[in-house]
Length: 609
Image (cartoon, rainbow, N blue to C red; front, side, top):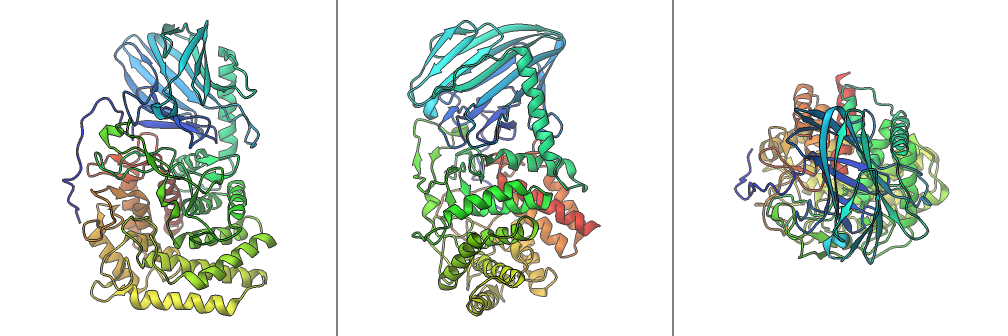
């Protein structure tokens, strides 16, 4: 199967580092993207959803950046210090070799931690190399004015909303707006640049070379100590552990929320309008993350998310007991607006902040949520009495509301429809709630829950199945296919070797799969209310691997999995989508993709024995 890709513009714009040419560092509150050229071109301070300080990935001229690179022609290579989120960018030149060690110290995981620090340590490891640095913040997504005041080896950047202090062991110069430095390092020498949020009782603090080295070592210890809890020892240990480290980086420690991605408006099609803000907590994505974390043995992250979720489930809003997403601090209002002064990555406008999908009805979130509660009750801690009351209230609500159209898992903007996947996950919600009630002897209206569960099953079997297509389809009484249905056997709705499912798997392979890469659906025959095309959806590609493995097609599954791994970037990171020539598209890195990689690796390992 091959979709028409003529709508994809192959833009050649050297002002932008490709999405995949980045590494990620963070401190469990925010992150920074560091390009392979040594430039930080995305950084929001002090948290994921704050306005950007460095945003040149969205506008090379107006976004702001922190450049740090050799002043002579070099080759660069980037890697992570093993088993950590400390990023190293190496520069190779005729006269020397040097490296930048980028990291954010995880000083304190507690909600009360106030210091946010980004450290860049430059070390010459052979010969001699001249370096240049240019620190050009553009506060408030490039819309706020600021000043830069220089005092010796310290510069203070002030805007109406944020103050940052830069301390350096190299000489600094300034024009009142930006700060720059030129220096030469001999073998064994180093320089340090540290950027701190200051104000509100947090004073500026220097960062001498010895302290930077100590903080780098402490950060390495933190990440290695965390990763040591992993129980995964399978064939793809390096990729699975890198994915786990990514998911941990996307966790907001003060509340336990997990962001879908740390960026906004990176395009799903260069030049297209499918540009969204993913710096929020989707209930579905976070619930699937809990599944992946529990599989690996990380129970504290699941516990923190459960606490966040229980606080949100009290009461019923316009679309039910839960919204589809929340701010990382738990806020429910996420108004969507555009930033017309930013041109977008490779000219892909609009750049959006906030997300209007907040008000959508997506019934599938309840299946993901209750399934995660069920798994936590099974592998983590038994559900509390208050937690069970919330689960029971959700199950009761679903009995009344499961049979209605919604916007679906892909949050389309073409109106509500009777999506089969939404029905499937309503079935999951009730089925898992029934399991918990039976297993723990908990009070529940079991006759009513069973009646609704069975009604959903019969509706999917009768109206979600197309005899003409020989497959389960996207919507009731429809003929279109949808990759979300790859979840049917994983959700234990149907046997992975059931003839109806095997026929569906063949139909999906024919219509939506291209050399192991899977499209969500065909937007030409199944309009989603948006112009343009998109790449293949990487979570669906990993779901496809699992579906093949569960169906006993192990050679196909393993080959498809290994092919998918070739689309990771040089650090093992994935964006949301893969474009027609193998480029990464969409927000980066994407939690959905990495959690599905973990699940696919775990289950393929088990199937291979």
